[in-house]
Length: 291
Image 1 (cartoon, one colour):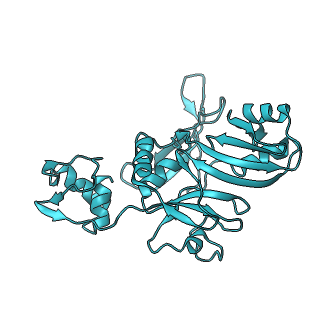
Image 2 (tube, helix red, strand yellow):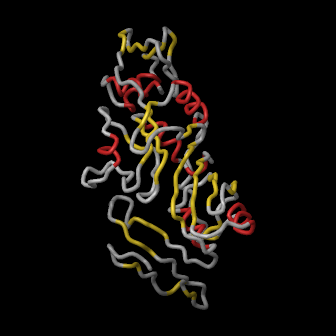
Image 3 (tube, helix red, strand yellow):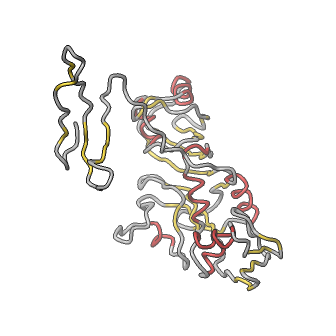
């Protein structure tokens, strides 16, 4: 667990305040000064100003076999929400989602850091599904599914598809478009009759019965942390390039001493024969934006 989360979960202060304490050199882990991003392992002692910090919030990771009809939401107003269905005594939440009309493996935890890392689109974490369709599966169907199908304005990434029966196959995805498998099959003229997720990364559904769950083993949790340790946020802040020929507007203050501002559109002024500029640049009235 990250040191700032460990401190925050203990109730000592917020994560932001914990980071300040760490930067100031007031936090130690087993006697050594902590740094931003340091991990606290089981059995290690954390101190702030020499005072031991106790965090009794144990990390929870469970694998749940979601039945059909259960909605992957924590919204209490949804009568079929996943938290009521699981009935865990601690406050946990699902990592990702699984459609209401699909069943199978979904992981729930109280570790928000892991959730954020696993949900980032560029992590390429594998998810495997077992699928049954309404028509005979042929080689053409398998090849097209594997090499990408146009849905939702994009072509799906290449994936692995293995035929497991006349009407069934397993598929391994590394992306999570909305109702992706159903849309892919529909594009090729097939209808999904049954869809079950059987694996997320190294964690398998195994023999967990529908509607039941089990705690992940320590080995599974440790592997999960290692596989997500280098996860980075998807950059959604990249600015779009301005189209060629687009007009430029300048944002100027009316005077250096007033906070009131006006939008001024550049206006090329005419010059008379003597070189003097004539005419004035008109400013758009305050409160109105240029279109």
